[in-house]
Image (tube, rainbow over the protein chains, first blue to last red):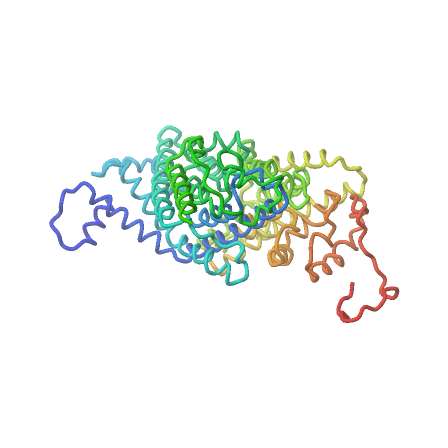
Length: 319
Length: 255
């Protein structure tokens, strides 16, 4: 009943409406306030995330400096974007479930919850959504500040978050991040609903973070997986939790990212035997025609790629 | 359950494996050499976690005042807290670490000598003691903070993750952090350098003089077992100061 009561109390004195969304809106607001209240926890988590981001950047950089970077179409700038945005958006991955929500299934308090005049699934969903957003937003802002401002200030400009491809890419990134947020909530919901059958939450609590951690691209960036593995992993929903959104932000960005070798790029971007270091930004390359058509199942990445290709061609013809 | 934990934690190594599939090496280190470091730290972390699990709940004792009751009992607090729970499934991490460690050792095709065995045993013991000590340290902070801080996972989990890779890949500030703040380098460095047959301290600590000097004094010279590991290929420069020609301009360099 908390949601409804909260909504009724906090709103201005209005006649009690029967709009179906009011309780959910109340849940959203109260959870937001409850989560945002723990500032110390947010700062602690943020420090941890900066540490992990630095660690990840350091060993990935070492890999890029020592191996044939040609093995991948995913350059180091893309890795930087992947790591920092991944750290910024970590809060919205379906890694942590609210023990309060699922716990009721074992103890039996779920019966009380079922008596509430709200739809249980929606109630849980909104609650999870509010928590995710509240956990993510402050950390994301701080993380962007660190990755864009602080890193160059302390002399690590090489590791800062690269600029996005453009306004369109940023907007599409925001859109796909939003969709990823909903997807993450949906995955968490499925995990919690499974508890109606399994009762114990130990299995899901152990397994879900690991699965998401690996298949969501938090252990290593998904584009760096071996190609057969990657083909399978990218079909799974976990890859879209935010890995897809993040990797697509940079991948089609031909002018600063690395073009794909071969295909229709006409040899401009082909690098003979990895002559160029993977860390140096390659020269601009015209987008490879319809190369993205064979790129497998993707949504906005394709769109972005076609956009990048057409804009770079237009830029060439005008100059 | 133990096997399940082993499977779950092994996903980290799958990530390492995938990166090696892409890039082949990391600063000259091959997969089995990194596997050795990974296994060493995973075993240390897993065993220490199993024994020191009680310290994870230490904040609860402090918060709820149960600590007072423990203090009244006629045994040391240390034994009581660490014995509070002994989750056997935590050995899953140690198990997969041991398997990976074994694989790394086999594919390194070492010439086994008693000294090497002793070094391996002491490295394992050192890793266990190190992580146990870190757990103890992070739990005692709750005397001041009451809550277990998430930041402290940097000290434990972060140390394990960072120590999987040779220290030579990190920047100076991070390397000194791993040597002096969280001394995970003290475990990973002599053992790893010796086992892999490469990267003696001079190379591992790169251009960082303080660390180099420190390491040479602390670990290299005092650890004769290192030579037995095959490090003899790059013998440590044991210079005698009397024979060394005076170099101008750097009177402060003692090595």
